Length: 516
Image (cartoon, rainbow, N blue to C red):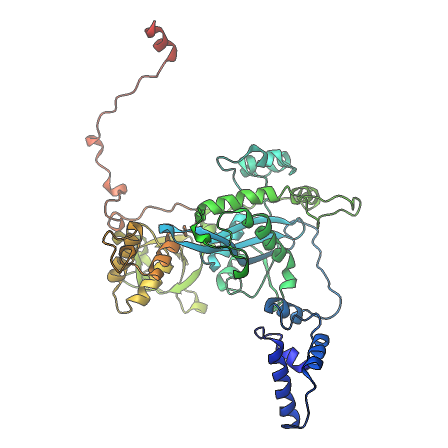
């Protein structure tokens, strides 16, 4: 029975009856059929209760696996004495339904980062599905001040907080209109074995920013317990107060949650950003000073104390730095341009590099391409000869009315496996157009303008995922613009512009005199 209990540690939860049956099977395998007689059911229940004490053998599978993977011996902890010395990152589904485009309700993923020394939640990102670029965006938001938003109370400003605002402002001018969330540059980031964090893109982003990358062992959630507990606090202190809260499992979910007035993804992201600023001023039980053990400090107070000894160095990310954080792939530059996932990109600036070798022997003389999974309208080619980036636009950009992500493109490719690039572009544009139109007037069998449930979900997630790069590169050529979209080439000649008649300044005192 002890062997049966050990086998059940990583399996799905079963009842005691199965464990009794499995115990009999083990006896037959070791000693033969009928060699050992099992005791009565009452005796088996008493024996199982003793052997499975504290192991949750017939209880929660998640708790059972966590207890089974826990190491023996006393627990240790790596201390951090400076902001950014040790930070942890993780991602989890948020227990809230959001309203995506076309009214589709869905859950989203929450990716967050916490500083161990100060317990500061430096950034958090909400996405319909988490990708490696989202983890890189989280790094960028961590080293960037959080700006004050319209409608936020002035009490949330950094100038009103416990942070040393005046001294930091002399070093970093970006903090003048910042919210009360410290800017922390990571030195070491601890992540789990999720494919988002151990991806080549996230490793390259950490290497670019000079951050030590430290993944934990398999099934070792306690090695990043601070972020695990932090994500739990988001659920209890933030998520459960929102409309559309689902609970963390099906047993805790209410009826017709999807019929509640749900927040959109962008609105929920702004609410979360505001809540993070409030969290920074909340006393934390894990922040106590040996000289004042009876007092709890807030993350901002702890940061203000540690920054006096650790110092502060601002890291300002340029547009090129944001491009560096995007996922990378390696391609050849052909006569027609660059092709990625059946999409062709080209620009006149690419002429000197066509059908040329990059000189990077480790990559078989291919060229480094960076792209945004949430915006297929453009890519960036690293100029290995002269340095810098070359922006290439999609050749079929004129066929779509708005940028979209790879989720809609991959879904359409699976639906039309033999279609050409032009046909795929038209199919994606038609999918987004029909999803935007809403239900069909005829009320036919197709429903929702002929869209399946899968089509609606893909279209909603695509439109709810904004581009990852907060930069404004050059405008696409006029022939790449969508129908009806104006560009620099469409500007009228200067001589055709109508004469501008200046408007006189309104004088309220003069107008008042006229009434008398």
